Image 1 (spheres, one colour):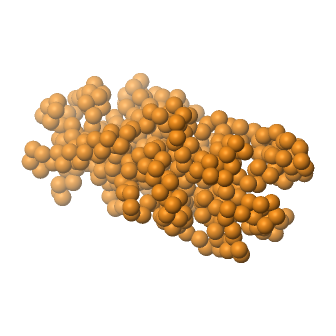
Image 2 (image 1 turned 90 degrees about the vertical axis):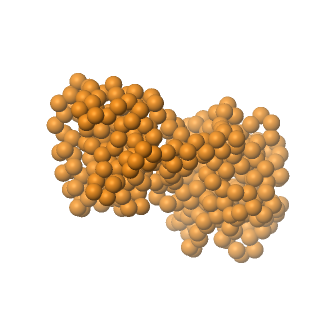
Image 3 (image 1 turned 120 degrees about the vertical axis):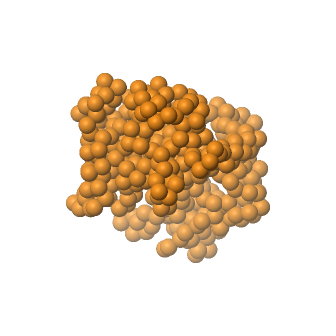
Length: 441
């Protein structure tokens, strides 16, 4: 069953769309991403290109009236019967919040569908025999890929489990029965699922954190500032200046770097007017010394306890962008991080040392390096364990779905060659990361 949605408007009706726009956190998040009320709203996508619902879209977060999909469903149909946080945690475990997720169940000989991974026969049974008839499939199983319908039936099933066999059941029973059926609710096979559920539920964004997110006015101001910064990059002749794409704090760190300070002074650069090198086509790029300094500063300030290396980041930048400020081909910036990936890392993964208001921000070397390091760390620690170096590097270069550990391919060989440019570090005291055995490669 091939189903694909590009826009929210394709998978919910106009009244549900209006209800979501009325949620302040949702409207702020959408407007932050450049969406406009009255027009089609893009669904978020993860780095693999899979559609997913952000936690703001999934969850109610505010002491007054902030509603989103789960809370709207609960308020409309199940007031006082189920906690929206339970729905969100189950959706995270079952589908990673992907509306079009599918999983074939060999035992049931049927396919689980959608955000809550509901079996069509379960949805039909809930509607026809248990009185949960707000939505009707009527043989059209593809309706379970629509978020509101799917969450409705998932919540209905959770409620049914909560009073299974006419007994008031515990949260643990309900969650474990949702995973393995009522007969496995106390079986060891569902214990890990319950433990993961508790962990996910605990990690859901707190109300306090969402109350502190930017207002629409602050978002607009950030966008205006980004446009002003972008337009100022080429002032002062044909050169692009470091000071137009790096914060005063980051520039101070660069000037305090002894190797950078020495090189910039020798080439006649002055504070406030540091020029990028250019190729014969007037394209600005970072010298290897500058690239290495940016990587060192980012890792020391933001990833000091993480197993990342300066040389790894620099080698990736070397082959992905050739150190060009704006990147090459479709991948922007020195680290080639796409805007959608940076937004996902910022919103969903909590990497928020740098704000991004537009794709232009990824042409700023510190911003690109920060999100490149963030994505590399996510790849390294994904699935709850440290991944092998070859997997991490291949996944960064070509995408997680294109990794082939049996065939490294030409890109990996280029990476190994680029790595040699940064292995011989004279300033080892400043950069101890490239000496230890506990870091990647």
